[in-house]
Image (cartoon, rainbow, N blue to C red; front, side):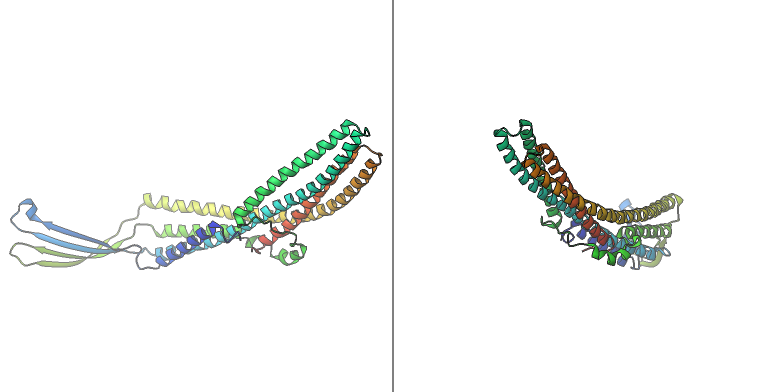
Length: 375
């Protein structure tokens, strides 16, 4: 849905269409349109009585320099390839953007669920502490600590809900809907199929850098074949008249060949040489960056799996400890402060588990995207 409404999609498609038409135009016989010129001369304007009159018309066309036409066509086709890979890269960027928003939204939604659960438990605890305080069974310090903990959780809950709404607004601007995508359906069973396809050379970002290099080399070839302005050849028709004399008509051929100049050629060629150098640099940097990114992605998935296992154990033990301390507090064995600390620890453990679970699913989804499985 995000790619369907992405405004850059139409822009890139327009670039590809324009490059295709330029390639078609480069197959024409002449690099530019014909030039039509005319001349009229008459000595009557200066008061002469001889009566000379001249009419002259000329049609000329420019000519391709050797290899210039094919080089221009190849440069246009290279531009078309760049637009094609730009579309793939933008498609990937859009998918990663949606994945990032979905991951952030899922983490916030899980945190809200945990905070709401803790807020409900603390609400009941605060009521019990309040009654015990009025009965003189607990100190004012315990009561204030309970109220402070409840207010802190509720304030965090409100701030987290606001952040989730911001994520939903961003998601709506990208996809047209504010519904959070479900990442839980993406699991490790997909890794066996996509891990062998995770090849940096097939990454569209590397392919785009390589296409830009081909584009730069094609532009350099055009500059090398444009070592002088295009020569022109044409046909001249001239008619001359003198008073009481017959007309004299002439037909001839005219050509113009501008000579090469280093003042024109060297800056033009060196500009393309610099572009080739920058493109070669970008290809090397893109290959290194993508290889590093893939390695980090695999490590992130392995680490997330391990963290998820430990976070699950931590959450289970923290919940049991908080439940046991809740019972101990109710019978007066421990102060309420100890129970509140245990409840805070359980909340942190639950948030850590939810984040690790979402990071694991998001890492699998990112590996799918990088392997070319872009919706």
